[in-house]
Length: 78
Image (cartoon, rainbow, N blue to C red):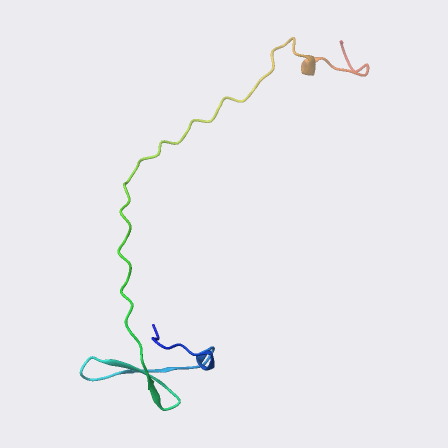
């Protein structure tokens, strides 16, 4: 993360130099940029919880005397 970000750096290419002694340096237009390394966040503690799938409810079948079973408009017994 840059310690002094600038609007001139927005959408520009920055050269990252990996030195032989293990150091990194960021260079933009011939000048070294000040930066600090950002540590990866520690993973959040999460409790593993088993989730049982809920069974599907049975399909609704109306009883024989239900109004939906009676045919309307003269197409059979009413």
